[in-house]
Amino acid sequence: MFSMYDQFFFPPFQGVIVVSDSELKDLKLQKKQHELKLLEHRKNELDAAISELTNEIKLLQPSKKEAKVSNQG
Image (cartoon, rainbow, N blue to C red):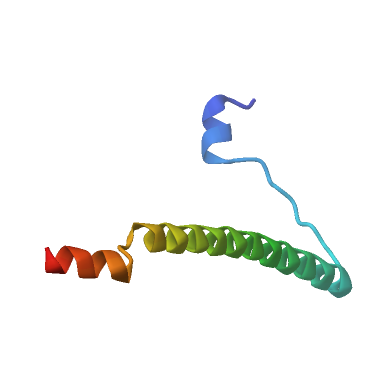
């Protein structure tokens, strides 16, 4: 007779999955390609953010003419 106690301390056997070397190699390749795609997407997002911040900094910095006028005043 099984109880909840048995299931807690003796979980059911999960089994073993057997795959061939070529299948394992294909799965690893798919995983690496997926990781690369995610990293490239993140890189593109970061590049866009850097470009946006660079443009904002350029807009916020005073021009050379404005700097000369404020220094003379």
